[in-house]
Length: 115
Image (cartoon, rainbow, N blue to C red; front, top):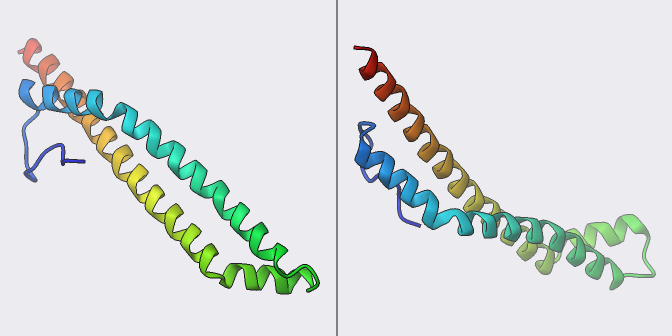
């Protein structure tokens, strides 16, 4: 995903709003997919934990839980969740920034009409 605005300063212009809206148009499916990926990863952690606990059926529940959560498979599931969450948040914050750009532009245009 490319940055919406490469520089740290910008002015709310017709061009910046066009870039923001273009970015939203291009990335709406990616944002939806990132939400689905994060939700899937969240549920996958539970599956992995259950699978790891099943390997220790004869042990007490607290031992099963401890060993399951120490397993490599569980650690990998947590990392997948972390990565999916980070990607979703980056897209969400960029999406919100794009909306803010449009809001600033709209306010700027309204103020110019009053003058």
